[in-house]
Length: 127
Image 1: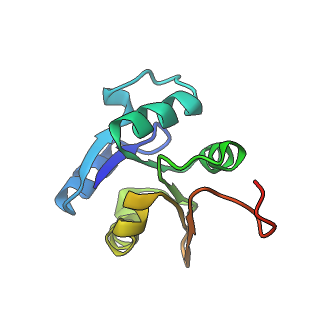
Image 2 (image 1 turned 30 degrees about the vertical axis):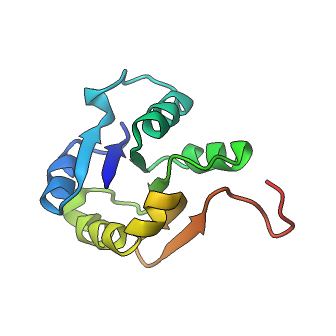
């Protein structure tokens, strides 16, 4: 599974993710630090990467566009250091790998995780 770590997360995530068996890049190695979220999403979709972020805007983009890709993993914990929540994140990535490969939004906080299959629609079937 190919993971693109957003600018709002430390590049230290890359070593942890690679050690856990994932292919991982930090956005700073492929794009501009001030890139718009939509640019990051487009790059990830084109290159078949899953975005790992602490930014809620990525789920808003998926919802407003009814996008099928890329998948997004939102880390919603207060402390997003890989030393603190890294083990929980890597377990969740392995557990939800097939869903993320197909298209999903995975939100993970200190206590829970929630998976939504793409495209994101409300209960009435609309965005």
